[in-house]
Length: 76
Figure 1 (cartoon, rainbow, N blue to C red):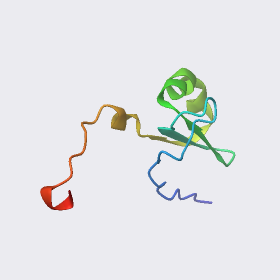
Figure 2: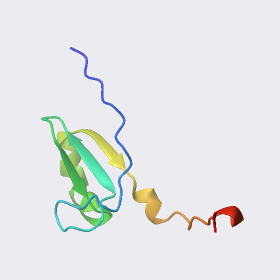
Figure 3: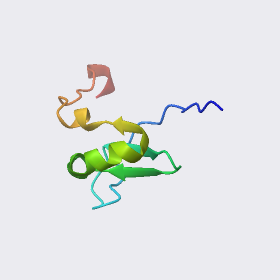
Figure 4: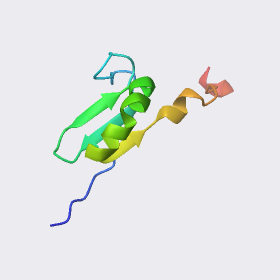
């Protein structure tokens, strides 16, 4: 049997860390099914254990260091 993972949608401000309730920047799809969401802090803290049980890890922590997005003049 072949399992195909569909691309996950980007995380939004409505996605919250399952540990503390902060904005989630990591989605962990579990081998057993289901998913967990973590903020950057808890994602780093639990990373070794999560790698053991994850089918996929969607890491969007790079958004924390990205520069601000500026609207074009015609969008203001």
